[in-house]
Image 1 (cartoon, rainbow, N blue to C red):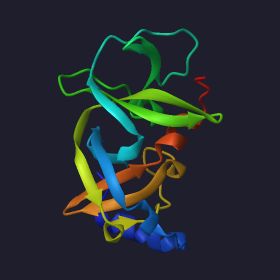
Image 2 (cartoon, rainbow, N blue to C red):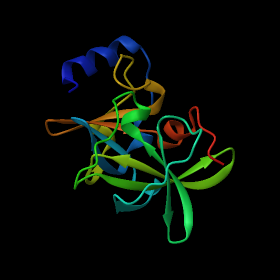
Image 3 (cartoon, rainbow, N blue to C red):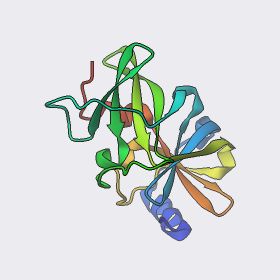
Length: 170
């Protein structure tokens, strides 16, 4: 788990002064491993329980396969695997968040496999710090900011960047 003092130190050392007020808004929060993450609620199409995922040959290791959702085929990305955290274990709480992203200028829906969904939070600018420059389990360019809510830390992901990096799913 990321400690508060590590984040504050890293932000001060980065020397950048980003406008985090643009990041304020509603976020769907979820869990990967022991860490909390959030994505903009406007990117979320729906949340579904774990369903049959069909493996597709020659896909990147973090693409678990594809699902058939109401007659449409959508890729499913295992965020554990994408972030170098191993493979998501299938449990009763494991679910797929279907998100709207733009890839190569085209809108598409992609499923992201997560350990569990937490809640929707309305995060104010005062609760968000800029992207820290320190070594965690994912590249910092995937992170829009870090939210401090009560005693918890939520890593706010740029889901378009996460899913575009190293992938061509179109």
